[in-house]
Length: 106
Image: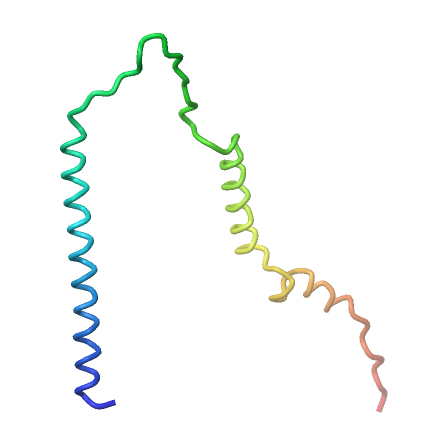
């Protein structure tokens, strides 16, 4: 690859990044403008409306902490007790229990 094609590839990459940054800045500015225009409006429910309160702790029925604990347990287990595919404790135990060939007298 000669220097001209390498320079062209670098310049096209810089141009692509510049276009992406320009699109992102424009979209951000449109969002800020939209929030400034719509943020002044106050919405209220009509009288006699029943209010629904949503749980503040979100979705998951409490499974997320259990999954997080299980994940970290498996990470720690993998760090300290290596699996059989890497020659962990079971591999060493089987090697020591293997029958030894009889010694030959010379």
